[in-house]
Amino acid sequence: MSSLHTAVPAARQRGLSIQIYGYLLLLPALGFLLTFTHYPAVATMWESLFSASRNGHPAQFVGLDNYAALLDDDIFMLSLRNNLLYAAVTIPLSVGLALLMALAVNRRLRGSALTRAAFFIPSLLPMIAIANLWLFFYTPQLGLLNQLLALFSLPPVNWLGDPDSALWSLMAVSVWREAGFFMIFYLAALQQIDPRLSEAAEIEGASRGHFFRRIQWPLLMPTTLFILINASMNAFRIVDQVIAMTNGGPNNSSSLLLFYIYRTAFSFWDLPAASAMTVVLLVILGAIALIKFNLLDKRAHYQ
Amino acid sequence: MTLPARPFSAGRLCLNLAIWLAALLWFLPILVAIWVAIHPAADQGTFVLFSPLTTQNFVDAWHAAPFARYFLNTTLLVLMIVVCQLLLATMAAYALVRFRLKFSGLLFALILLQLMISPDVLILNNYKTVGALGLRDSLWGIALPYLASAFAIFLLRQTFKSIPLVLEEAAIVEGASRWTILRRIYVPLARPVYIAFALVSISFHWNDFLWPLVITDSVNVRPITVGLQLFSAPEQGVQWALVGAATLMTSMPLLVLFLIFQRQFVQSFMRSGIR
Image (cartoon, rainbow over all chains, first blue to last red; front, side, top):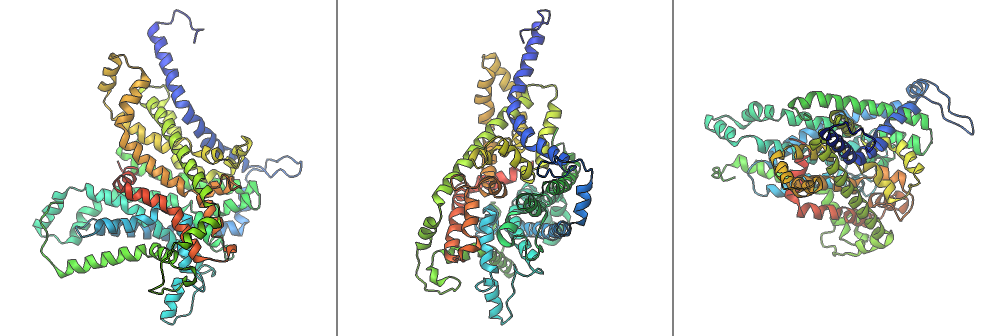
């Protein structure tokens, strides 16, 4: 800043150089964020308004045509419906189970560290590894589930090969992975509840159920909200197990949003369609995030 | 927990038994994989009680695909990402907290947008960007979108804010430079947060799949998740014993990490959520 007039008071100049120093510290992180988060998000929105550029013809501005085309794309609509169903089923299940697990592990019982580990470890494994574990259960001939059914002389089910059950089989995998993860948050919240409350309830002779309904559950509300938001974000970004277990099949019955975006972009190379779908997904995630900021952060999280 | 033991009751015992049973059932998929992996491949799918134990499946799986290379790739990748994330986030958080920047509120809001739009949704455009930089099919290419983490900045900013200014003022009086202050005061005091974030980030990037799948296409950069997926793809003619062994191998480092850092792990996942 040598071009500055000498009239500038020294203190002010020092203030300025501190500002520059600060911005320089911020620059690397901000640069990466702008390049790989903000720019691609904006570019995706922009590109979703153009047609594909084909053999020398430049892309044409087509307005909302790509979005209109999505409405006529049966597979996209199916993926969207599947994804909404997926969210509606897996979120309550995994959050409910997480709460039960946390209450179970939070009791004074022998081996609670072991039970906690048993519940939590599945959420540490790579999704691809988990998919393999569950394929043991689901495969048609050797699969354990069908061996179990055979024990009771029931006919085998083609879990992943039947359009009626493929999506549900994937849901089970998601719930198995997520519940233990969310348990941790509930456990943290439970342990923050003042032990004097439970002692008081015991002295008063309140039943456990009553204590849970009247004390624990209300105190767990912020945690429940936090988990619900996270679970919703996750539910719309599920892709690994779809690729590993069903590839969206049979007959697209287990195709989900991000999976279909991946296929459209990297198998069909239909970039305008993929961009428009990405925007739809971003809008869904953005809406969830807005709910998050409005609901959760009344507790002055970010101030 | 130093409360007196409750009197024995049958109801409590039943409930405890139910909980143990539930935990065992929950863990069953992993137990089955272990069982299949440590018994001869010929016995796969049957549960012969006295089937001999063997480590052959692990040896075979290890040689059936370039797993050593995959492990090296993933290890390097995770190290690169976590070190850069912490470095960049430290600088950014320090700037946001202690430099009274003019637009710090706006900049922080911009940063937080990443929590809402995660990079894994933007694979299409990031694929183009990384391609334009000529870094497709390279470890840096996989790492680039993740190098700046809004979450790390957010956590560190909170921590730095809670460090009393008095400490810094005393150091300034002593004539310490800003770097020295950052290194000697802020970073040591924020150590638990660094460990917490590192654990969460390591487990996330060790498991990451879709983006590496899209951006890599050669053995030399392929991470373990993509390698495992290729290895267990149905074209192999399903070799359950080998797939089971490979699956356990790929998860092993994280499990070991978990067992070593069990307490920090649980706490760090908690910390990442609720404050």
